[in-house]
Image (cartoon, rainbow, N blue to C red; front, side, top):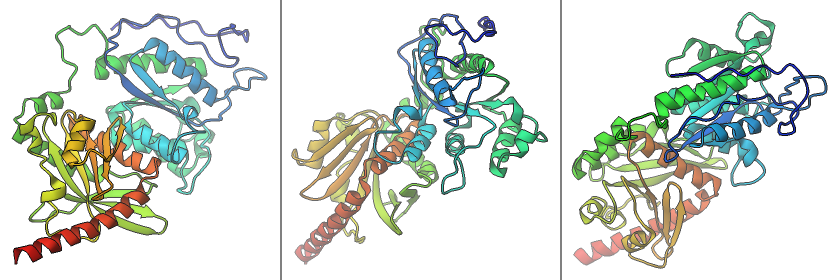
Length: 422
């Protein structure tokens, strides 16, 4: 694969009218022919207000550099969308620190820049940058493109020794373990610009497979997605439920209100789970009933695998909290199908990127419809997106209060069934 020509280094402080003072130049080569039908999410992580000091009087910071880098990535790679916390620190729901952590976990490409300044410590004793690194690493080591300042390469150097012990360990681990990750060291900001763009070229060609040089008939689907598509409804239904169960330990938002999701297997209904929710000093275990639709909801044979869990699977319900129904869809469902499914057109339905959240204010049914769960990784991402949405948009208190009422409704209904059967 031919590499672009390395641009000449800047040797003067003269700045072009189209450049921001203090920020380095990027390669002037044109983007390759790209397949714009495929997109991937990039998250850039670094310390915010780290001074670049490229020349005397330079006041630009690493935060400015990230914005500059974002514009250049969009120019060269039209199929990449870039997230940096400068976009939504001042607005949006939820804690900014928690939001960046979730974005780092859910992104497709993670660009991490480590410098010789650790930054502000939060209540956990870690910096925001390290929290983002660990969230991304936990989700997928393969997506991480790492760039470490040259002064930190030598573990016996003064710059390295000044860093906190956990930061030293992170840097050491990144240097010694390179399987699946691109790890580079940079000496100056011009060099970093070249390294990042060249690394993205290699990563996109090898991993994202969005370069048009691929044959027209080549599939952009992963091996797992192709395998799932070739399954029967019954096989796909089983593998979707099993993937949820296997991914369950990873369905958590560290330092957040949702601690974890655990399996609560029971003989009559093995697809029961518990979400540990922390509000203040109390923890609530919210029951979940899991279902899966192995294709579109419009296909009756596929919809039959879901059935009506809020009717048939709550008989003899013995928990004081009613369940949250989580329904996984291999493909899609629509607003009107959800209203018909719940049996009430006058319900609350919220549409998000991950799917729908529906509430029936008469029977206090709460259901999450997670769409396009076509691989185990995609399924896990949908679950994490839904959990993050519950936290960011402050839905947890309402979720629990409705579950309490739903528990009373189910108790009354089951008592009525028992009386009627006598």
